[in-house]
Length: 300
Length: 119
Image 1 (cartoon, rainbow over the protein chains, first blue to last red):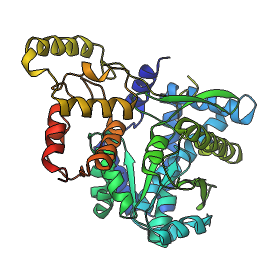
Image 2 (image 1 turned 30 degrees about the vertical axis):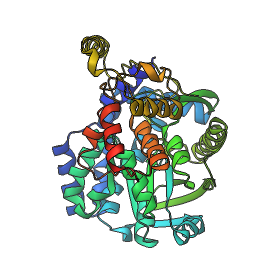
Image 3 (image 1 turned 45 degrees about the vertical axis):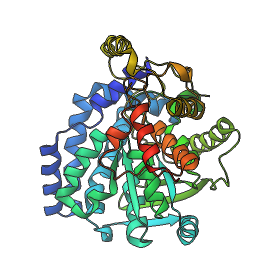
């Protein structure tokens, strides 16, 4: 499949559910407690299992690779349930109800050191587990100024949904739809902000580079890493792994220190850091397989 | 290394025709499409910085830089802002409401730099 078609495919299916549906979901979740709201997830996941053959195919293809065996329907259901759980928890996390959760943080000293130095960093995430839990830890426990960089269409939806959950956070979303979006990122970095990016997808299919991932080549976007290189800032991988129940593990791992100057061989620098990112992501997938939330053929 | 042509069609296939039309259109206004020496210098800087596949002299000074036209994206815009600040001491800021106009062409970018550079 061409990158363009692939991009169109995920843009089209990415966020199932319109804004009113999201708002209704948020409203219900915040009026029930987490335990009651979680009961809704089972019928919802059954519904998606029955009505979304494309997502089922995507899940099956991924699970076959990561588990090394033919996935059962129960595996796919668990995969969906993990995704739905993280989505629901996002509402509580954004609403700053951290009391529901048992969150263990690993590598906090890495972000502490960057914060003390000032100058910010880029936090590379993926559609894996809960980026939100990691962000909530950064914001509420460590009091880090965190902004999220995302595609404009997502940014618009999320800003609108945030208005219903926690309006203060809407300013933390930077949309990529403007020609000066990344100039804004550069300015926030200079002010010591931490900039979160989900670096496993790309909307226009440009600058995609193949890396071996779970046994076959898959394409990853170079863009986020190129930005980090241009801005000469430290790059930290941030991953929130859902363990079931109310437990999350948050990992901060250094992908690159801030280069002293623009790397002379930029391509080699990019290859190095992307290789480390993909390897870490693969490791996380093997260790907590159901946290992978790209429900399309990632290897296409 | 990233190399690019003059025409990009990242959005839809019809854009190609449209871009060609615009290019043909502006060729007819030959008097406006000649680069001034300053514009030529800036064009060379951009081609070198962004590894563009076009030669600097062929860039129409009035062709849009972003998206259609020269086909640059927001990463390229970031690189331009960095190199412009380094070379001319001119800061391009994200909260400038005129950014769309400033980055609209080689000509307008050059005009902005010339009116803001340190003497």
